[in-house]
Amino acid sequence: MCIFGNIIPIFIKMILRSLEHIIIDKVGKGKAIIVKGARQTGKTTLIKKIMESQSQNSLYLNADIAIVRQQLQDVTVSGLKQLFGNAKLIFIDEAQRIPDVGITLKIIVDEIPEVQLIVTGSSAFELANNINEPLTGRKFEYYLYPVSWIELSEHTNYIEALSQFNQRLVFGMYPDVINHPGAETEILFNLTESYLYKDIIAFQEIRKPEFVQKLLQALAFQVGSEVSYNEISSLLQIDRKTIIHYIDILEKAYVIFRLPSFSRNLRNELSSKIKIYFYDNGIRNALINDFKPLEMRGDKGALWENFIISERIKSNHYALKRVNSYFWRTHQKQEIDYIEEAQGKLEAFEFKWKVNSTFKIPKLFLDTYTVSNSEVVHPNNFYQFLRHE
Image (cartoon, rainbow, N blue to C red; front, side, top):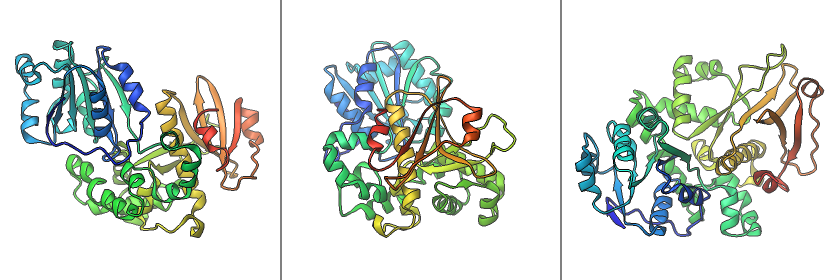
């Protein structure tokens, strides 16, 4: 394997990522493989491991390095062939750094079909703007999230993973956090201060980045609650359009995600409300500087809800299961924590911290919609929920 750029060390314990077998299965299928996600989730480590498992010659190009970017912009087919040499597996890391990268990738796919192209990027908004149109019909696209609970359980074992359960709800699932017990707080503060805003500020020209931090802190305190753009605008003294713009950027940067309300226009359903969750509990807690042990916290329910929904997002993606996700609530405060819609079927889930909790779907919902499945998900059965059992 030829490395053109800095070698990034593999983290201490190589956790098998669910994307590995999915990507390996796509090698040689005639399309570029795009892996997107937040910084420090292990994209480079994953792809280098895949490259090392393949028999053909490979080349790693780190687009964070200026000379690499120069070689990959304003390209010609002959110039690319000279750069690639006899390599048949080409990995371009941090591809969003390359101007007009989509055109470059299209040329590689179309004109050098004997090469398998694998591309990573940590700035979804920048990559998406540059690759979607040129690579239409020419790519497989995946996301790498922080380590999933299923990945952790399969790396250790079910009992060992459960022994870490409280820690994971507080400190989250970033690879570096998992692999350095005792240093979680320092790592998470470094992640939030050094990486969280890097892509946002670099590519979106945000003039007052301190507003982004204040917005994230406000959202961190509202996990599990309905978010009002107007209330946040009033709280932070920022206009509503700017709030919405910043939230859109933060979602594209894989910091947060929105859960819309489910509605088919019944008069008493909430139709325009949203909830906002963080992809990682540790990032959320770093933003509010609160790493108290779980047993001492008043926000256990919010942490549990954020954890289980983000884990379900990971589980669905790695299972290649496409669903629409929602919450449901009426003006009379009848509610369902989480709804999935797939192939015309609805499933309803309630997330409870207490194991003996029960859940009954509101009559209005049952009278209006057909529900194929409903469950209470709690700490004793969540593993089955994540495995779709």
